[in-house]
View 1 (cartoon, rainbow, N blue to C red):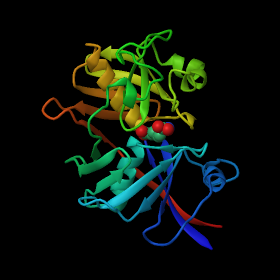
View 2 (cartoon, rainbow, N blue to C red):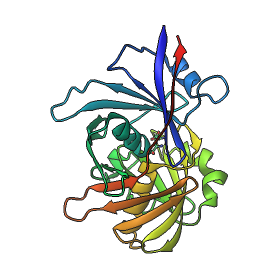
View 3 (cartoon, rainbow, N blue to C red):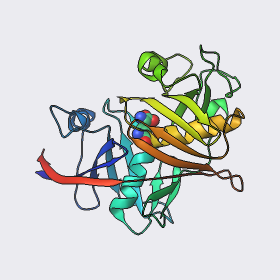
Length: 261
Ligand SMILES: N[C@@H](CCC[C@H](N)C(=O)O)C(=O)O
């Protein structure tokens, strides 16, 4: 059986997207990991499955899988790619809730990533604590954008150096995405993210949202901030009126193809 897929990328964070609204695709965790593999498969940072929605108000149901087979509740860059692929500014049904998308006058894609979650139980963390400064070297702040993030503000180099160990620190019962920031001004940062289940990527959309939320909570950043990662930049706005985080950036269709199962 041949399975059709789309290869897309947002800031070099790349995805294989399979639209199950057009035909069945049942995959084991092993098959999904193989599709993500850059030598034995198509190659991507996340595999994305699209299904018919089952919630009122949603246009498409989206699920995100890391190369290690784990499922993520949110993926910002893939959300923009799905919005561009489906077209017409769809509302995405994700495990993080309904995420409306929009197109800017400049042709970039925006996604309303919803409200950040700031309490320790729902990040989640292993025990009761203040999420503004965790008891780890570097004292990161934590939040959930539908997936768990810890943000360090002492430089991007930490991501490659300590990311693998920090992802699995016992403080994070569901592991965590590790974002490492250099602050350039109150409206501009550089960010590198060690992604849970994927390792270092060129960009992480939910990580950019988390970095701005945590930077604002620390009093370091304004609510509108340009986040530059190795693959390019996103504009993040943590809107005061309703607490929602808006993420704006590019989404590119690279190619489509098919593989056999
Ligand atoms: N690339 C993503 C995040 C993907 C999921 C993450 N690795 C997790 O397991 O939570 C993004 O752009 O947000």
